[in-house]
Length: 224
Image (cartoon, rainbow, N blue to C red; front, side, top):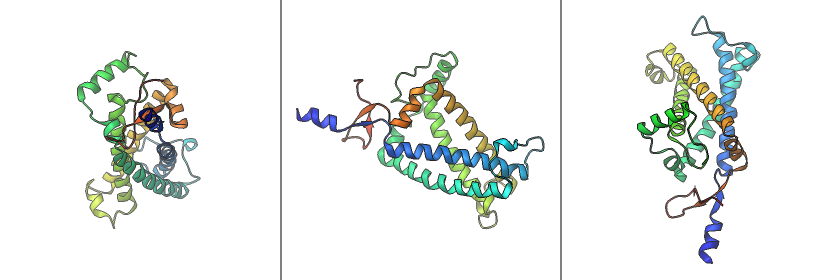
């Protein structure tokens, strides 16, 4: 009886409230950064043939877009640091995103292209999901570095030199933005294909069982 009560007391939602708040905060910050970044880009384009329509940009003019960009940048940095600290402290990154085997990634891509990739168990990430999540975290870190280099090119010249020069840093920042936009497109598409993943990130998802001996966060439990 005692063991049963202990297990029940350790059951909690798949996505804790703190994680859900950080997830949606990151999502909003990224949307603000992308929209305002497009407004800033239009003021001094990298590619003469590429201009973003005003209706998808954020800000009345470039300086206004820059203000939005700075605001969202600080939100993303603070929230992102909290997310990374949470992921390492709870063991979530190790448990959810590792290991990533190339053979498994290739197999899952083939399964996805033939519409045979299973989506029944939302408590586990497949190899493609793991790769995308780890990849976008690394890209966001790169965006922060290139963003600081562009913002303070004289004071942070060492960062600028990592990308050859100021225009190199701008190009890296632009390519990072492109990668994030592509990630969001795939992420949203997969979420629409499996609507319960959206619900889980809103409500917390199914109850799972924590393993206090190995993790500080829940582990998947048998279906009720």
